[in-house]
Length: 239
Image (cartoon, rainbow, N blue to C red; front, side, top):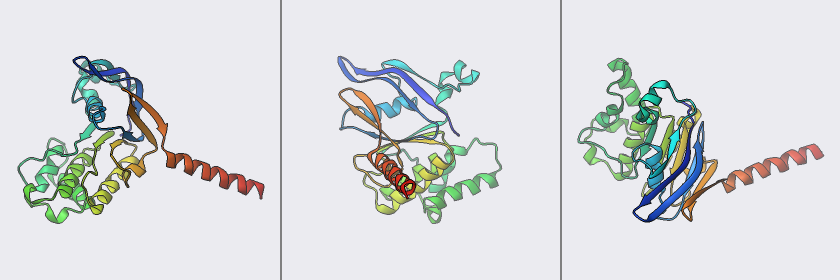
């Protein structure tokens, strides 16, 4: 489940306007990154580039562990990367059918697939709504369905675009459970959010898009935690 991707000299332009130019960045393995920036700076655009949904104006994305199939068919290098939209697309059907869609071609038995789907729905607290039509769900419940559908695919990198926007506390907590599980499996996360919350608290790095480029730094709370541990270590040695 752990992969690493790197980018070189990626930029995005719209006519004469340069949205951003990023000399280099890397994700993975097992990263948790908080992507910040004002509205309109290109956070969503960057996530879509990293997931292969759109092409940058220039630059390239590569994986050091690319297989020969991925070199021959470049689109395959994005197969383990999932982009989770703020308002995810869910098709006309039941909650169960929406989650099942992602593994419809898997080789497991129907019994094993059903067990995976029910487990995913249980993790997001929606197992009792498995047979309900997607249209009866609240916004927070729909986001949980989308997260369950992403989680069941076991992505190596999950790109979460404003996943907590307008969500209630329970929905955020359910997303955190699944995000933590992915991290424990070695996956990487990139999360955008306009405010800190339980999801962004999982992050160890910070990306900031500003002045048409991206800077990377450890999060303040990580620095503070490291300093606190250093102080404890120094105090114990002094004693």
